[in-house]
Image (cartoon, rainbow, N blue to C red; front, side):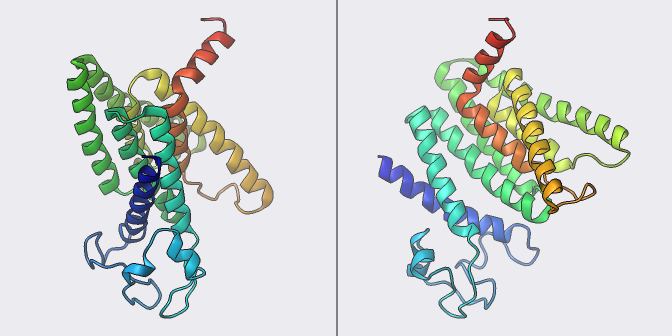
Length: 262
């Protein structure tokens, strides 16, 4: 089962690479052309050259046709997807919650990479995530015979958007410039649907803000970014969401004990 989950994760990661490359481009789609192609020479990639991670290693990171360098992002996305799928399997087992976690990962990964590359969060990924999440959440609520579970997730989606919108408005007023993009607000709504209750949303905002401030400061100090340079917030929201998805209950309980409320 572990091997199957790993191989499935690597295969999904390969598909996510297609999404990451094609979705931001106006002249291609996910399903057309059907075969993957080299972005440099546009030559279709053979099936045996499209095996996740392994083909990259065998080809030594270069296209077989034109010898152009293949970005290391491709195998990294595949490995990250496989590793995260295994982690979700270890945490949730074979359950509907495991399926919900896989759908969440499959949406968050391309959102993060695209946001880093292009400073955008495509609507198609948000909508896909909302549809998948809603279907699986409804299935879990039906399995548990718990309508409140469904309601908390719907409330979480609305609350996630509204809270981040309020933060964006306040931030824009203080900084006198746009503090946050609309894609970040939609991503927070997605987080609310998948995570649900308010402690999880609070932790996502807190962890994403803290990690964003630390990494942003490090980039400015190192000279790789200036104070005026935009820094994509999507990856920090996504990383915090995965952290809360896996260990949110433990982190929240630890916090309550620390402040003496538990």
